[in-house]
Length: 354
Image 1 (cartoon, rainbow, N blue to C red):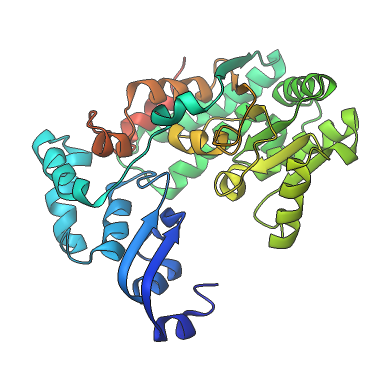
Image 2 (tube, rainbow, N blue to C red; image 1 turned 90 degrees about the vertical axis):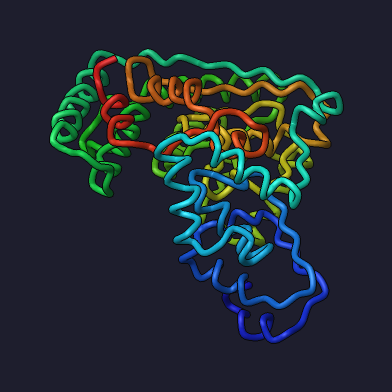
């Protein structure tokens, strides 16, 4: 609406402009960001659970909206902070940036409200692929590894190959149209969902791949029935989305399949006491945001979170990166060591043999 009604909204002088889910304007080259920057107000406030999802450039854009000029021009910020921190790991620059932004932030972490929330259990559910699945996966992995050997930088083509490898870890059918042998991971997900529903509980099922979510939906429907499932992705109309959320919260439907990108934020789904992540995302903070659709204020039941990870695939490597690389946002907001942008060496590690 902000983009569509930009002319009308930017003509007005507002007392306060408050952006909820403000990471929506994190990319400075987008129409959404451009429209937000044109709003006129005496004061500006932003709310977000992920002030930095991937790169420091996102933080610069949020502060450019909040307090234009505080962090300088983008080029100067790039040279003074982004390159020294993300590329070179210069602790002095990280500390300096933190001192600049801290006076403008109020932060309440999950740890601070944990006493107000029930228990949460995280379970990594290992999936042992069939011999046929492993053979097909390894063929693709070897081709991807070979293609990476001569590369010295990350580009779109390389990322597309990595995406195919991640899809293959979910289901070979996502990359081979003639594949007839099914998906072990989907079979495991269906078993989990059926068990949860039989025990009179509710579950959220997330995937970043809508094609994989479609596959899972078809098989879950076949097992428990279409009337027990809601499905939400980026194409779901707002009104239908609102009705599904309301019906789910009232316990009318026990299973909610959700695209990570479309439904990982902004939904209150505390009727769910189970969460299943069908595949891992690069940044664990994004998965956490999705889990928080259920694990948030208003939740009065213990929550169990399953992470389905295919053994001996890139998914295991991604989990290792989660453990060895600290989150970029946390480093600035809490003081831990800074992470860096994904490098070509990271990608070569991800596609190497386990």
